[in-house]
Image 1 (cartoon, each protein chain N blue to C red):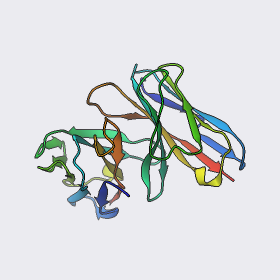
Image 2: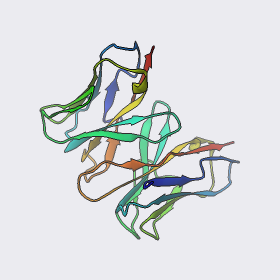
Image 3: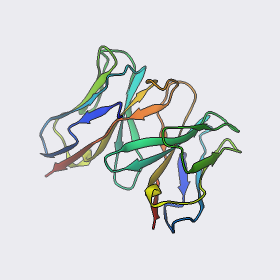
Length: 113
Length: 112
């Protein structure tokens, strides 16, 4: 059973387009993290959101944590080829307790010229 | 540069062989983790450690053992490799408190 479901699973868009990736769960998390992973490398932390309803911006990326702390979204404005990669959400402090991360299923993004 | 270093980067094993994957971090992090990443399955936790000399089972521990004799090192062992253990293995560490994980660049293991 996958606790965190991401959608879409794959996304191929043109440079300049906007996109939103969703991360949904039936479980409550104390915080949620987003990572980006490039081929042949490990995931790299982008942001941590802690408070329900919190919105964080990182240049063209906007992250939101749901009010009930069960879901999150990542919005990219004016996507660039450098945004290409696998985006992973990860919940902290889920049903297993503690500070272990539960990773989502991932969204593979490709931005073409 | 500070970070998490995994060795080896690639390895091919025959069924039944054993091997040890090494993870080293130089950030003085208390917590260390071993994950495996498979297509369509995401990252799944194998074992983890909350400090030197401690280990605990994660989501998919069967067929693996770990040791954390030194704070900076976390070893993952496969006693008798099986084709189902073909995967990309990632080590990660993090400090105490709320913080993100720092991942290594992975070990791609193929068991034939």
